[in-house]
Amino acid sequence: MKKSITYGTFDLFHHGHLELLRRARALGDRLIVGLSTDEFNQKEKGKNSYHNYEKRKENLEAIKYVDLIIPEENWGQKEKDVNRYEVDIFTIGDDWKGEFDFLEPKCEVIYLPRTPNISSSIIRDDVIKISE
Ligand code: C2G
Image 1: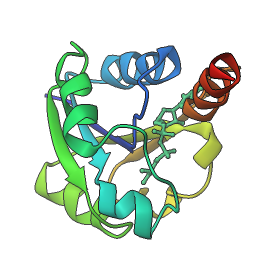
Image 2: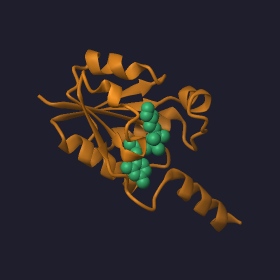
Image 3: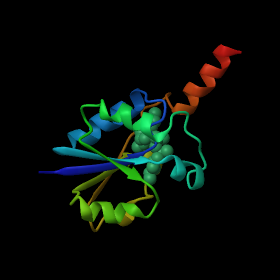
Image 4: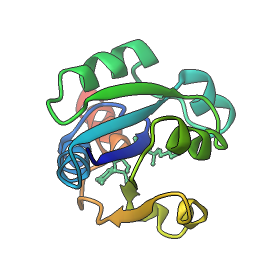
């Protein structure tokens, strides 16, 4: 059984996220998602998500491509996760191209093209404009 893993905040879930998860799942037979915790977002990623971890997890649990959700609490956990879950493929959007090549000896690293013209910040900005 081929297992893939990916990580992200997945805030204000949109079709860019869905397309990433669909393609990530299609690389193998199971997909694990490391979902950034609120604390990790605030302290390490410098971003406050609109929805908290529980709500973002609830969204992902409804996505058929996602088989397991684990908390992403720090940058350094990826290697341990790859070992612990016996992951074959690490995958993420190509906005991260090159950042995770260090995982190469442990698993295949695949950067998937981002879906253009959609992001959580675009959605937030558009909602703010509409409400003004
Ligand atoms: N994504 C995409 N197309 C978009 C927006 C996002 O393919 N239009 C992808 C991103 O490249 C990422 C995933 O969807 O692979 C989740 O995006 P974010 O929630 O923005 O994740 P990010 O903040 O990049 O966190 O340790 C890795 C980080 O946790 C990744």
